[in-house]
Length: 167
Image (cartoon, rainbow, N blue to C red; front, top):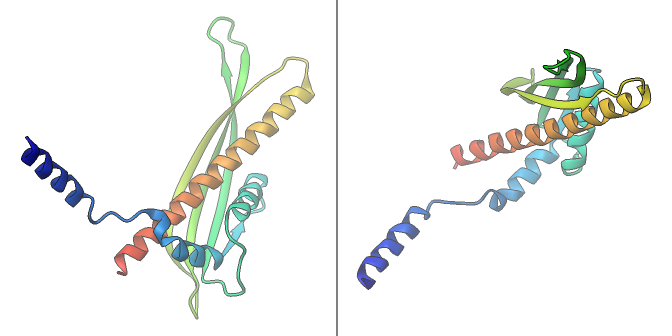
């Protein structure tokens, strides 16, 4: 019984031998994220995502090696209840097209591109315009926060894969 347990333990530990946690390459992320500039279209959601990303990233350095380009489209759709077919709420759909460029001498080269989508609901308050607007603004803030988290995670995964390939 002890021999089987010992063999099982050795096999289990051997399977985890090549694992390296993401936080061990923290210096690589810190260096890469410090050398990033963020550009956006002048959309309100894009500017909010940029502001949220800048809060999450380390302070920028003087040399820029990468550029993140964010273009966001927002749509608002209504949702109706099934009983009386009146509009009961709205859904904010935010779609961000994100491109990562590497700075080179002659031109910037696109090295990674992806799309992130976020759905957020807010309620319609009949005859209460300020309450509806506050609910809509809160939905925009939540969408912006979630999109910035997703974008940062995808960028970090890209740099992690790049670092593993270059080893």
